[in-house]
Amino acid sequence: MKCLFRTALLALLLALLGAGGFYAWHRFADPAPRVETRQLIDPAPAPPQRKTLRLGTYNIAHARGSAAGTSNHNGESAEDRLARVKAIGAALREADLDAVALNEIDFACTWSNGIDMLEVIGAEAGFAYAVRQRNYDAQVPGYRLDFGNAILSRHPVENARLVEFAPRQEWMAALIGNQDAAYAELSDGSQRFALCAVHLEVDDAAVRARAAEELLALAGASEVPLFIAGDFNATRQGSPGYDPPHDGPGAIELLLGGDAPKFVSQPTGTATAADFTFPSEGPERTIDWVLAPTGTRIVRKEVVNLPLSDHCLVVLEVLR
Image (cartoon, rainbow, N blue to C red; front, top):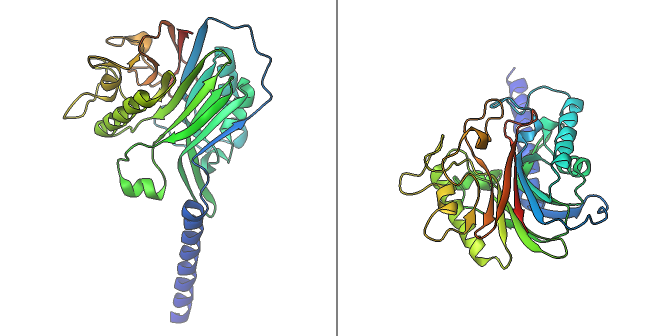
């Protein structure tokens, strides 16, 4: 019996060492690039130049559906998950966007059966260019996390890079990753601008505020007009769900407020029901935003409620 116990214990230790070595190699010795740019399909013929620019943001919540708080391991088949991913792509095609920021998009996750959602959505939506930005990337035998933010664009992408935010927990960032951001410059031939895709920390207002300060610094250093889009997990002061840090303004107030704000967006004041973006089954607060550089003339804002995610798609249309 003792011999059997020792053999079982040795086998367990060897298995743990093997899994740990596999994880360490993937995470530290041979990590996947944090940011990648690629062309997904041949670009379509250039449409007639329109006078507006349409930018969107959509937290697709791993394409698990519209019910808030459900597990990513929802037990559905690969076919069902893939059908929802394709439906997201079709909805983005219908929205007729120049570019869109996507959050919680899976690149190779076990819970979504390894579907590369960026490839599928980009092709279905008709976007030729893509930026893949990994927030979380860790793997052990039989299980993988690989998801983050993405930018899809009908215009060529240049100078794509990672924007790193101070993490909430250093050890967690080292072990599996952090909620950082993707920056890319886009050009339609007549206009050049930058888009930053963000997904800010959900549980800590102070961490979100620090990220907002870093975004303000990014805007100050950018040589082209900078738009920021994503799930900020933050609302405007006075709006439902406002959750500022104890020692200062919240992330949205930092970005849209102050004596000389660097960004504008809608709503300009207290959010109403038409502005609410989350949860999609009964929206009650505005946490998904597209921010435009100060001085930009906003034509319209659209909140599109789709039964595909627990967030709504947000579109901001501005004059070129």
